[in-house]
Image 1 (tube, protein in one colour):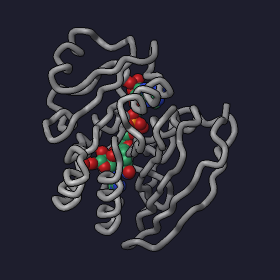
Image 2 (cartoon, helix red, strand yellow):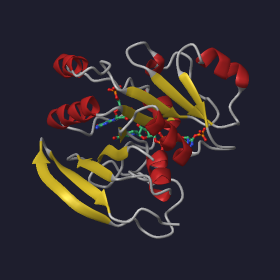
Image 3 (cartoon, rainbow, N blue to C red):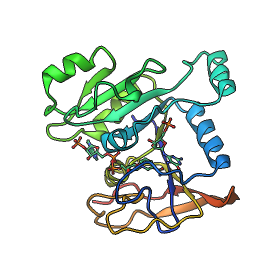
Image 4 (spheres, helix red, strand yellow):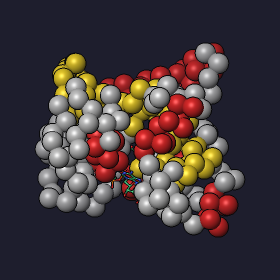
Amino acid sequence: MKPFVFVNVAASVDGKISNERRVQLRISSKEDMERVDKLRAESDAIMVGIGTVLADNPKLTVKSDELRKKRVLEGKPENPLRVVVDSKARIPEDALILNDEAETLLAVSKKADLEKLKKLQEKAMIFVAGEERVDLSELMEFLYHIGVRKLMVEGGGELIASLFREGLVDEIYVYYGNVIIAGKNSPTIADGKSLDEPAELELLEFKKLGGGILTRWRVKRKRFN
Ligand SMILES: NC(=O)C1=CN([C@@H]2O[C@H](COP(=O)(O)OP(=O)(O)OC[C@H]3O[C@@H](n4cnc5c(N)ncnc54)[C@H](OP(=O)(O)O)[C@@H]3O)[C@@H](O)[C@H]2O)C=CC1
Ligand SMILES: Nc1nc(O)c(N)c(N[C@@H]2O[C@H](COP(=O)(O)O)[C@@H](O)[C@H]2O)n1
């Protein structure tokens, strides 16, 4: 069993999610950021890859006081669980995602350094899955087991591509901001190795939002290799 998995990313019109320096760029409009905050508040967990943590140093918390209060009234923690996919435990010990505003699960592989894990254990739950890289299917089963039913994936491109390759994505939201970023080496919505066959999607929704366009897609067929 696995949670319902949806991806949310903001891309330029040319499909980039950052530039060649891989710095955090604001692509979403104010209206889109509010939508993203609602999606976070409705989720049980929010996942990112270590590339995103190293580039952006995100907190992945719900920003609206009202939405956090609503979660508490519903008997949930103020913020969803944060999940970092990080085979070798490269996460800096002072990463904001390890702060005490929310619980964090660090998913590592057997390659992770045990001494570093001992230190990180004070700040995050550790889950080991996979020999070299984190075994994403095993991680999904574990998340379901601990009660995660709705998982939001916020990037980056390499993690998103792996999730598609393994047939783990149910839906994807792409917000196209009104910008062009360019750059052959700029990260895109799905990076890493290309899929053997393209993943087929069904368009569920599109609308103008702020200066850009919000699209929502369902993954029609899950296995591509
Ligand atoms: N505009 C937007 O909406 C967003 C933009 N971004 C941007 O994206 C960029 C970061 O993306 P990217 O560099 O692709 O990094 P990711 O966040 O996708 O992390 C990728 C890393 O995760 C680790 N990993 C562990 N197991 C797996 C697995 N099974 N499959 C895939 N990855 C795995 C790998 O490192 P290891 O082998 O060491 O474990 C890998 O290099 C930044 O520039 C950031 O600003 C990010 C999120 C959203
Ligand atoms: N939806 C969206 N729009 C953008 O323009 C973005 N740059 C991102 N980035 C994602 O949000 C994370 C930052 O979260 P916090 O504000 O620190 O809570 C960042 O790491 C990306 O995953 N998203």
